[in-house]
Image 1: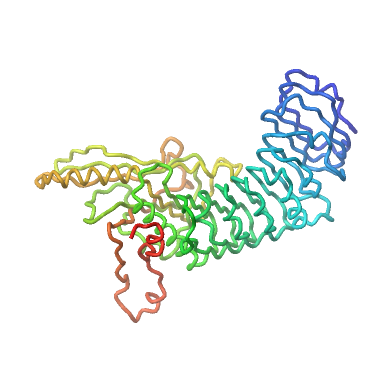
Image 2 (image 1 turned 90 degrees about the horizontal axis):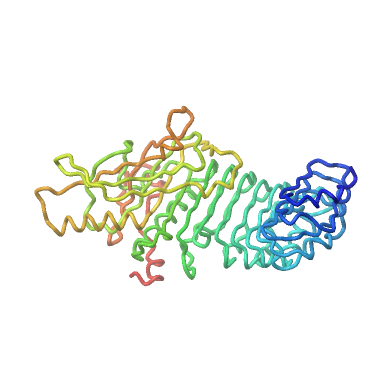
Amino acid sequence: MLEVDSSIFFLQKLQILKLIGCTSLKNLSSNTCSPVLQELYAWDCINLKEFSVTFTSVDQLRVGISEYGGNELPSSLLKLKNLEIFFFPMIECLVDLPENFANHINLWSSVNPEHDPFITLHKVFSSPALITLKHLYLNGTPTLSEIPDSISLLSSLESLMLRDMAITSLPENIKYLPQLNQLNVVRCEKLQSIPALSQYIPFFIVMNCESLEKVLSSMDEACDKPNPCFTVLINCKKLDQHSYQTVLEDAIDGIELRARLNSANEDDTIGYLLPDMPGREYWFNYRSTQISFTLEFPPNLLGFAYYLVLSQGYMQKRVDFGCECYLEYSSGERIYITSFTRSNSFILELSYSPLLHMMSDHVVLWYDPISCKKIMEDIKAINDANITSCCPKLAFRFFIDEALHDGTSDDEVAIKECGFRWIYKEAEDFSTVSESQEDEEAKERIHPRKTSSKILKYWGIY
């Protein structure tokens, strides 16, 4: 088939047209098309050289062409604006796309070996379409070892996905993109280091980058407004000990800073999902291998962060996890205070499988200002009442949503450990864990620090 009969475009109810593996197809043209057409794809049509389709409407329109042999972009594409998604190979003529061309652009490696992806991207990033773009997906470019610094031109970019690429590091200027809200890096198996980003990008997710070793701290840099964030490092098995402690340190500093700003905004929730590595246990004040327990909070407490350790295994990507809190009296009576549930659905787009495979144990750490404030207010009310004869304790139950995770499968993740990190009204130093000053291992062990006074002074807290 050298071309598609244009009459197919006249089908009035045609919403989706997919041409897959039509290796002889050279021309895809029509002067008009169905008024309800929403998706048009030409996948693996390796000889396609002409594309000229006149769309009745571009509202929510998705257009995808995986291979294109033309020397210039089709004029019919240059006339389009406000597409929902545009899929296309990474070629230099993309620089001619107009501003506001698409909401989401997905690019991948060109089959032409003469196209250097670095040079191509460097030029394409200056395109009016890219400068006004909100969502960019760079995928399947095994010869691209570096992202051009010209990515700094993408001033409207809100999310960036890097998948299946040969990059060894990320450009530091990504953090200065003013609108960037989410950065996903998936299966970039040669990625070795990440610059200081977490304070600047609210959702930062790295998944199955097995060569990643170094992650730099961003908390020593003063930015205009540090973001509440979700930082996820899944299956990054080679992360070095210093970087691991750096990430945890940044997490604790960010949580304590947010608590001291006295925010009770749901948007200020902070969450981390990290590999479980040696040294993690020294960052938490209360630890339990039981998912349910009763305790008394220490005095002088401003708030707390939750944590739990998930075993290796599989987990539904829509599974929620969280914690319930009750007042428990000596009589056995329990009064519900609050609960907090956190979904991992923000990683849905990172894998086509409905299951998330955790290749090792992982730590989930989060700070929820709403539930924290509710619990602390109830404790204060009890203390103010000064009813010492029946002073209740706090009962907690950590959970994984049973609706999607029934725990019956041997390879499902389970909660191995859970507990809290205390946030005191006045920052306190941790005491040394090791009793022997001669113990070399204890000397080398990195212990938690109190929240950086430099950061607190910057925000006028001290």
